[in-house]
Image (tube, rainbow, N blue to C red; front, side, top):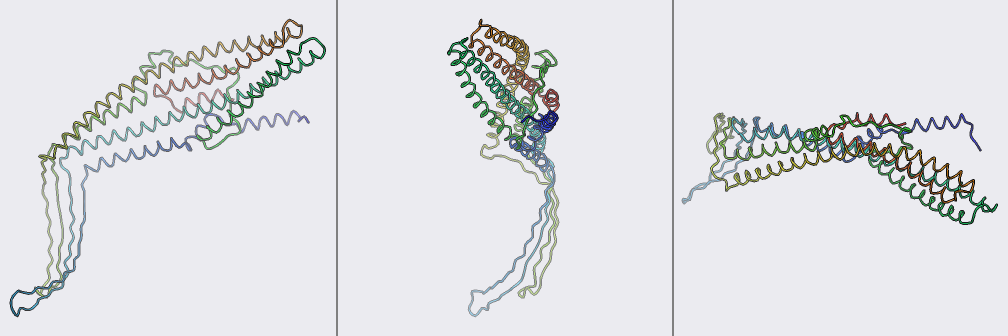
Length: 439
C-alpha cells in the first residue's frame, strides 16, 4: 500500500526534527563521558593544592586539655610507720599558636601550588579538546558507516536491476548465460557487503553511545555538495608558530617545567633557618588533697620567637635537591618534545586539510565522470556494443567513488579540528561551524 504524499512529507519532517546534530551530541558527551568526568574531578583535586600551599604561610592553633584522677598511697620504710593516702584530681588546658615568620620552603611551596592549580586547569582544557575530537570522530564514523550502508544497498538494487536485464536478454537470445552468472556473482557479493555494512554501523553507533549515553534514532549528515573552506590563515608557518606556544600540551609542559624549578628552590630551602612566633596560654588545677590539705589553680602565658637551624639530616636534604635538579632536566626535555610534537601535528593537520580539499575536488569530478560512464555503458549494453560486466564495473566504480568522496569530506573536517587543536584554539565554536554544514 502506498502512503499519500502528505503523510510521507509529514513523516520525513518528523524524522528530521528528531535527528541529532553534532553540537547536541557533544553536549550530551560533556555530561556523560567518563574520561571527561575524571578530568573534571582531577581538576577539582588540583585546585585544592592552592589552599594547601597557602596554609603553610598561615598560623596554626592547637588546643590540648587533660583531666587525671590521682589515688596515692605512701608508706615510709621504718618500723611502725603509717600509710598515708591521697585522692584528688588534676586537670588543665593549653592553647598554642605558631605563626611562621621565615620559612622559605613554605613560601616557595605556595608559589608552586599556584602553578599546580594552573596546571590542573590546563589539563581540563586539554581533556575538553580531546573530547571534541573524540565526539566528532565518533559522529563522523557513524555518518560514514551510514553512507557505506546506503551505498551498499543502492549498489545491490542497481545490480539486481542489471541481473534481471541479463536474464531477460538471455531468454530472448540477445545475451549469453555468462552475463547472468556475472550479475548473480556481483549481487551475492553486494548482499555480503550490505551485511558487513549493517554490522559496522551497529558497532559505530555503540561507540558513539559510550560517549553520550544515548543512541539517537538519526544523525544529521553533511549537506549535499557542501563546500569546505581553506584553513585561515592559509600559511603553514603561522600555524606552526602558533602551535609552538599555544598548544595545550606545550603549555602543560611549560608549566611543569616551572613547577620543577620551584621544587629545586623548595628543597634547597631545607638548608635555611626557620623563625616562628610562638605563644601559649594555659591553666592547670589540682583538686583538694587530704595530704596537703588544699588544692591549687595556676595560669600561664608565654610568647616568644623560636629559631631553628638545620645542621645535619643524614644527607636527605642534599639528595632531595639533586633529585629535584634531575626532574627539572626531565621537565625541560618534556617541553622540547611537546613543542616538536605540536609543530609536527600542526604540519600534518595543515597538509591533511589541503590534501583533503584537493582530494574532494578530484573525487567530485570523479563522481560526475563515473555517472556518465555508467549511463554510457548502459546505453552500449542495450545496443550490443557493451557486455554486462562493463555495466557492473562502471556501477561499482561510481559507488566506490561516491563513498570515497564522503570519507574525504569527513576526513578533511576532522583535519581542520586537529589543526585548531594543534594550535591550542579548538573550542565549541569550531564545532558550531561544522554543525552549520549539517542538514
